[in-house]
Length: 612
Image 1: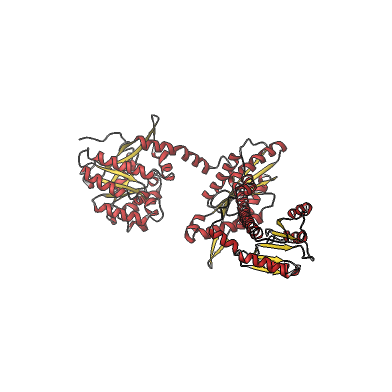
Image 2: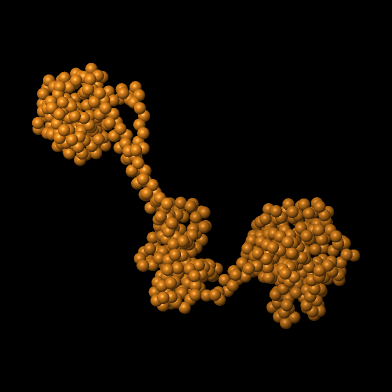
């Protein structure tokens, strides 16, 4: 296979053969007749005779020179930029102060003169083969003897000018090819550089890092050395990048790259992994030295100030460290993945810190659990492998079950999983909205099939109120099933409601306008519960189970539960106590005025609802 360089050389060598010129047309002849011709000789009469002969033939731009100084002066004045406007020299041998040979040597030293043809005139009337060979060897186009004739001289001049035209075209074509070749060489060098380097910062890229790691792992195993890979992530870079623009973000990355170059040794391998992620491979360090270096780097970037348009932006970095030595059986991908996981853990633990990789990091265990469970949840959504179970809620006022809470379960390979197994994963992996919409859709169909006045409580995640599909779905299901909205209670946790307070409140108001009720679950678990409760339009408060499980033995829980019930009633809201597992706890709660009781003492979650 020919490379760019080989192809260019091949093309360059073919120029003389491939240079195709059009036949001389009338316009071309006119151009040749306008050519600038210098006639040089010692005899004025001879020069006038040649000039007249050429003028009669149509040539008009003619100059006469009587010595070598005049010839050189014409050549010098003819230079315009990188070319000379003289198209032909006619040199008579009686110009004794310079020979054609010497003149040609001088002209060949300059690009502007090298292509100018020469017609040599000699006084000798006899054929001199040696002279002919000598002159032609010195780039003389034609050799003429005195006396000149009108039949031979003007056509020879025209031929010499045509030769000059061909030389100029070939030369320009060659210059063009050389320029293209130079550009191709630059492009080829650029592409070769980009294969292993980052375009923005000039650091090595991830592909090159993997090659370096492969080599380093081999060296470490053979020579029993060690190394560490630092994975550096700029904290909240996306926020800054989106706020002040990508151009400013690029400028920041270039500055950070320079900072890393100044911090590390030239022996260390610096890499830009991704958008705001860098990696540095440091050799011959132990784990303590690696962590110490990472701590110093983190301190250097702590409070790093980036100035943009007279504004200062403070930054920090999270650093993951992967130490490895000859005892490790790792691939380059393993090292990079472990360093990335260590950095991920550092970010989870609050950012602006260093974390040395450990397979026992709980954050990574959780992440691996999420990665394992995410496809199971997607499959369950696709195959409709979710089921609803129903836990009864007892009304203290009527002494009967007034409504049921819908609780979701997931089936995987004939096994049933509880919400604690998959709901946190669904929230982390962005699947919770699909589960919420599934529950709403199926709960509406279910309640349409059971007798009144039994009601259902439907649990919703906090972020579902940000989903534009929720309200249209509820409107559509309300129309399709003709269910009385008073038989449905939407339930949202206190912490979720507070985290998206304004949006949640807005959606609650819209759904209440359709006739639905709302319950606030896990009430009391948040420190700001009472502040939000005054303005949050819910109908029922579900007291968090942590206050109920040890209610009989904990006087503080008793005081708190009683105050929650009193405050709820003062605000016109009903209360539900969950996690009730014995008669004594139920009796105490009834004494506090709790409106509803829920728990295993009232009933376990069941697969079916009563049909009558």
